[in-house]
Amino acid sequence: MKITPSVVLDAPTYYVSHFNGTYDTEKCVVVRDLGIECDEEAMPAVLAKLPKSTHILDLTNNELNEIPDLSAHNEIMTLLLGRNRISKIDGRRLPRRLRRLVLASNAIEQLAALEGLRDAPKTLENLSLRGNGVCHLEDYRVFVVSRAPQLKTLDFTKVGDQERSAGRKFRKSPGKGTAPLQKEFKDKNEELMDVIVGKMSDEVRNRLKDELAAASTLDEIERIEKLLSGGV
Image (tube, rainbow, N blue to C red; front, side, top):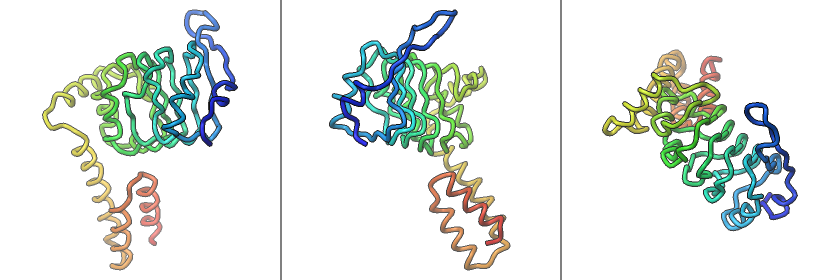
């Protein structure tokens, strides 16, 4: 479904309570569960029709494959983008005073897809990436903190002093990027594969090696490992 002006103009809105017992302080615009797809031509003009007082924008459970360009919407402080198809973070597209960003259950698989956090607003304090394959990579939290040191919580868990310190060291290390961490993750899976497939026939072993080498997501890796453990 393409986004249209009526989608935004007719979107449900409500106010939510916030801190210290005060109420009706943040206006939420709900544009969720509509199957909305990215449309680079129409979306900027349509999103410009958001109420100026929008503090929370809920775009949960749509078909977005990238973060919409909301950089001009300085009033938005919470952006909900869970259950879409976003595969990487582009911090330049985020509202410049954003505090909370939810990208749970998207299609972010590699650490390189998080590099855009470097350009995220310095106001960003809370980030959720739960349900993405990247969360299972070794040193994932340290990597995120190295790219967004302003974060206070990641995946609803407070960023600890040790993680913050490790993030600083990681950020300052020359040549420290995504490749070493991703290679280490790949090497561990290949080592596990070699142990298991050693008991199989040459034909099955070669086929599964090819499949695992070509696997690009954690779901694929897990599926193949289940087949291996079942003696296929």
